[in-house]
Length: 547
Image 1 (spheres, rainbow, N blue to C red):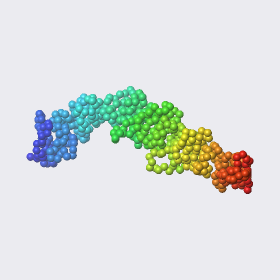
Image 2 (spheres, helix red, strand yellow):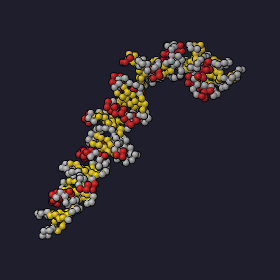
Image 3 (cartoon, rainbow, N blue to C red):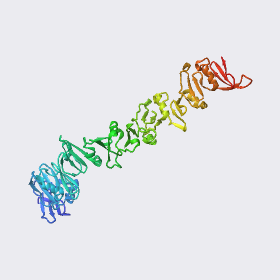
Image 4 (cartoon, one colour):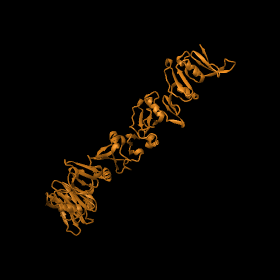
């Protein structure tokens, strides 16, 4: 006996087999009894046996050959119907299994694969001459029974989709994904040829190269009208940190953010919004979250992205507002529908100390440079309206007031004020917007509002670098030696006649105060200055006392 049994008889669907081991070289041998067919032996004679080689070529698991032999392989494909046949086209061997449901092919170079003769792919392969055709041998084992599939052969693929088999040759074979929906079509605009697949559309260019539209980008492109609406792809999709993006003759499509790790949707980006997106880059904005929306005020549009939004109007152009910037504040103020209008430019962080700001149609959003870096979005402070205009004339954050520290406050409709790092701006309809700062501002805020609101900004052209500021009911004066004092009423008139601080009296050293009068005990109002005093009493002449 040249072989010894390695297993008992094994019964599976389709027949019975038993594994043996040849004594001379411990190689495998089988006795196979397929149901309804003659039994046969394989591998018992010395040398390589093509039947054994084809069976081993289809090994499914590494453990197939423990004890009972290729049980998993036979369970999946069926028992061989007869010994392998060799000497076929290309010096190949063939083995049918499972009552003809599978056919394995292998040549002397080791190319191995199989197909199902009864499937549309199998019939198409046979009609082309099978192993003798230009396709060559199959290189894989793909189950096409009642399913869509794509079987690779040495020199082309055959695709089966909804019961129809189609040929896929180069260059479509390498450039496509999915099953073929059409054969190659030539005569497309620009000398192109194309073939359409379930997951891609591939164009063969006159130059010999290819360009394809795939997956979610293809779905969106076709939904928008494909070639008729957006034209042809200018190049293949480019991978960015935000996903794949692709340019077309008349637009641009980019992948968005997937929901729960699923396929990424794709959306069109076009026009001025596309120009802004490309100038800022996908890394800054991320992928689109939806298509462009053009129901904004005055015919404007916006489009949402993972990291912010791009807004556009005919009067402002396109600009981005980012989540890492002022988007929270902007949306809290109703975006383009609110008081700020559309952004006129992107956020810039070139303010003193690295502070950030962004200009809008009707105001500016500012952020202090010391905002903690762990805050995702900047809490912006707005300057706008008359106070914003006044702030701009003072060179904004680069001027004497520094950054705004609070939003504008209007305790009543006719009085508004805003706090800055180094002062305030107050506004009323009667006085306009004016700055309060320094010693005069501190004194006014500490209880000096009885003089009314400022009607002019502080001027520091007094003697020795002193300052003064006009209010509705008087003037505040300040110098480093005398501090801040107000002059008003009749004393103000006399002080003006005497040349203000430039005159002989100099700066005031006190506010008004009551004093016993010089005429018959009447109470008078007195105010002291560096070089004298002014005494005023109703109905009497104003008196100046020099010293």
